[in-house]
Length: 125
Image 1 (tube, rainbow, N blue to C red):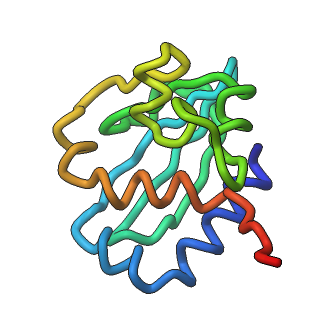
Image 2 (image 1 turned 120 degrees about the horizontal axis):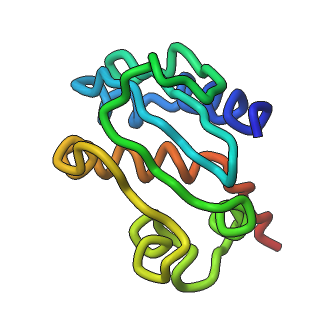
């Protein structure tokens, strides 16, 4: 999982339109997958730090909680309905948002596109 997050970090930092979308987003987000916690620190849209948890000392603005199998299905190149979006995961009971949901909503497109960076592109034949 940590390797996947580092790939997403590299992809984000080289995706100009996402950096522009997130230019006002400087927060720490907790990503909880099964029993693992990751703290993603963004500064002006760039992912500057990925820290593994658990940590009771690391403050975060909001958390996205899901299970590994659901996240794996979310990251497919063409995910099926319900697994296509973070709120789709919430709707089908495979994801949860905790904390300051207003901060997530204000930066929804940025966070959704960041989470989708791990999707492998399909080749068109």
